[in-house]
Each structure stands twice: as structure tokens, then as C-alpha cells.
Length: 264
Image 1 (cartoon, rainbow, N blue to C red):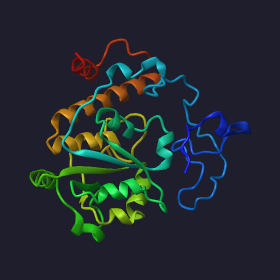
Image 2 (image 1 turned 45 degrees about the vertical axis):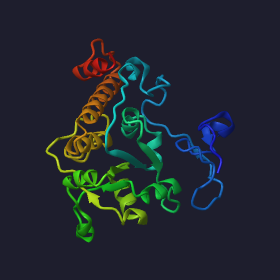
Image 3 (image 1 turned 90 degrees about the vertical axis):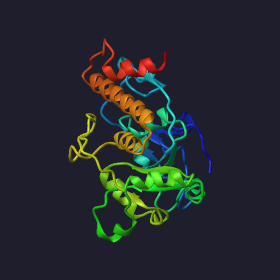
Image 4 (image 1 turned 60 degrees about the vertical axis):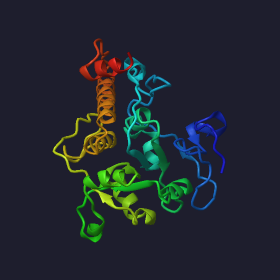
């Protein structure tokens, strides 16, 4: 399959119609191999705003000055719904910014990513699919955060497999991906409420993807990585929210100051 730069001039048809998936760059359906039918370019509120090419935030409050990296013993693998690639409010990309070894895979129901399947088979990794334990049919697969420490003691690398999409999309990914059925299910147990202000959650208990990753890292002992990702998320959250109000953040917030201190 061909992988070109998404949204290039060659990929456009008249009137803003795209012949490629702007998120993945694929011009053919990975399940059937058939040409992807033309679709209109994804549009959302704020799609005409001038954005920084580095962080994709509105230039009014660019996030690039606060970009930091950290290391963690655990890894994060994102299994991302195709539509999430289009959304500038997606927080999964923040994880990859901070933890450079993060893997991102696009989910297709009929065509699982072959590289993901290969990584799931590698003995050095101990992957956990992060999902609530609210249904009885997979209760025997549910484990606690203490299992993360156990696999570390065995010399293996714990991996948090995060289903990156809306709650409905995440449930579909969980149910429609046979290769996930072999994995232990790790529910996130926390009293923390979401701080995410860019999309309205069904409940304040529903954390966004970056918040879930930061909390799992914290509970699993990767404290520095959790702090870095949490601060980076807060900087993103505040910057984007201010830009929606057409307000410039004049003085760095507390989280931004901590991120800047990491760079000195």
C-alpha cells in the first residue's frame, strides 16, 4: 500500500473532496484492497484557524515552548480509531510527544495492523488492554495494577494498550478485535475526575486518553513520566481552551512553569 503525505494536492479532487484518508494517508481500504471512495475533508469548529505546524494548536497559544520528553519503564501503545487522527483535540498524540517510544496503530476492524500483531507476540512485552471491568463475559481476564509490578519483576516490559476514540468507538474496538481477547484487561481505578475541557464527557469520571495514560504511569511507578505527561496535558488543555476564547496566555501557568524548568 502506498503511503504519501496526507492532504497533498495530488490527493485532492474538486471542491475539497479527498481521495485519501487524511489521517492515515491510505488511498485503499486496508480490509478489501479496493480504492477508497472519495470523501470530503473533515471539518470541525476552528478548522480555519491558523495552527502551528509543530504542535497543531492555534498559533495564538503555541504549545511548542513547553514540549518535553520523559522515559518510563512501561510503554504505551495507542490503538486509534481512524477518525481520531483528524481531531486537533485528540490527546493521544500528547503521549507520543512526551514518551517517544509510544506506538500508534490505526484500528481497522477487518485488517489489524501486522506490526501490532507481531509486537503482541514478543516475549519481552507484557501488554494489558485498558478497559473497564463492567461486563461479566471477560471477568476472568481482569487484573489489578499490582500485576504491572509483577511483570516488571519477571524482567518484562508492561505495556498499556489504550483504545483511542470516543467511548462508543472504544467499546467497538474492544469487542471487534479478536487479537485483544488474549490480553489481560486492566481497568483504571482512580478517584480522579477529568480536567479535560475541550470535549464534553458523559461523566466527570471519564478521563481522556492522556489523563488515563498519566494515571496508569503514576500508579505503575513511573512517577516522573506521569508528572511530565500530566503537566503537558494541562498546558495543552489551558492553551487550547484560551485560544477558543481568542485569549492569549500572557503568563505561564504552574504546569507550564514546571515544563519550562525541565528544559533548563
